Image (cartoon, rainbow, N blue to C red; front, side, top):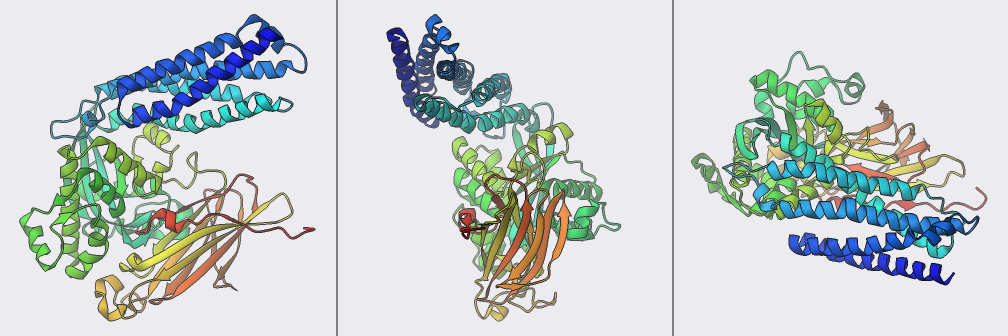
Amino acid sequence: MAWLGSRATLIKNELEATTQLIPVLKENIAGDKPQEASATADQLRTHTAAAREAADDPLWTLASAVPGIGANFSAVAEVARSADDVSALGVVPLVKVFDSLYWDSLMPSSAGTDLGPLQKAAPSVSAAAHAVRVSADRLDSIDANGLLPQVAEPLTQARAQLRAVTGALDAAANASQLAPAMLGAEGPRNYLLMIQNNAEARASGGIPGALAVLTFDKGKLTLGTQSSASELGLFSPALPVDAEQQQIYSARLGEYMHDVNFTPDFPTAASTAQAMWEKKTGQRVDGVISMDPVALGYVLDATGPVKITAPELVALTQNGLPTELSGKNVVQTLLSDVYAKIAQPELQDAYFAGVAQETFKALSAGKGEAKGLISGITRGTSEGRVLLWSGDAQEQAVIAKYPLSGSIAGPSVSPAQFGVYFNDGTGAKMDYYVKRTVQLVQECTGDEYGEVKVRITSTNTAPADAATSLPAYVTGGGSFGVPAGTVQTNVIAYGPVQANVETAMVDGQKTDFAAHGHSNRPVGSLTVSLAPGQSSTVEFSFGKIVQHTEPTVVVTPSVQPVKDVILDTKTASCVSGR
């Protein structure tokens, strides 16, 4: 027993030393210190190897077979072996890859980008991701019931740590496999760029007014043809769209580029946009990338300010628009000031196009630093402001695993996910002035099913005299039947698969609403109109929810920070006896 005790102490000390090195390794990587990271990884491996060697001791193996207490020895051994596998097959190879990748060299440039190191790194990243997942599955298979607390607690911690990294590593592996080809390593790739304008809400963000073609050729980024949704005009006959979505969002999905994203399902919107672009221009595009001005601001934070230099656009700035745009002023400029300063819609589109041109010119010149750019795009993606769709079915199958796809169904959607989306019904740019909050309220049902209320509060913060103080192009001027200054919004709520949408309330009063289904998810929608200064709260009740995981919610990205829109989930208290 003394020998087993010494082995237990050794395993415990070595694994604790490993735990203390993990923050150091993260700091090395975050600080872009490959040599230090390599040294830390080697230390990590030394400690995990020692723990594994102790757990593979013959007496320890023999003790693992003893009925009753043997399960504790066996669990400790599995934790030690998993830690060593993760270290040897996951951490060390990844750190070596990190040492070979110079992130600044992966920035786009006028000379192109050497994608070779990324291509060479892909197998190592995939192998590391596989090793970590196998270890995670092995620990998950251990029955923790009946284990001693001093064994069960480290096992639980190890499981949590591995779960936290498996998803990220799988994503990194998929990205390393897809990115080179999608960046033009095997030939030029053309993508339709949609700038979603949050001032006029659409379910996936905003009206896709500004359009352009981005070309990647061996990492070299160029901005090609620029256009607008208005220039593409009406498609008659309408392009075919999914009948289920057409019933919810009307045939306009296939009639106007402005309206392809009435649906929150970005693959549907993107594939329709691709078809529209190719039909009108004859130019083939391989996929669709979407950004909004807020995400554009994140990019400008990395590249630094850009100047408007084209003479025709400089002329537009004479009435007060900035000649230099940065992450600090781009949102207000593009979503508000441009409408106040430029009356003609075609000139507004020209200014939008000019800003996009200068921003991507800065990117293609390699301006800025890679870490900031990656951070900005990652942030935009996490907030639903950056979306990607590939016309290649195999690539899209991988993209569909992640929120970047903007899918409302499939592997990227968590089991108990709700969705709240907004479509402008004003026909104007008033959503810049609307502030919203979304909150899930879990109800106590007393049975096996769940019930959740989706509470959406909207406020029109436009000035009281908006009808006269704001441009008619912003208010709509009453031309669509909505009084100038009033915001009319179609509010759409999605529940989890197989649930029911049961009731809707507006400001505490039960009201009629439209009930539909989309990809086996219940959908409720109704219309809200808000005069300046007015607020309203909509509640949709979803019942017969079979999922027993924590509910989450996805919302249309707007001018507001997403953290200010999505409130913490509220759990209603159960009444005794229910």
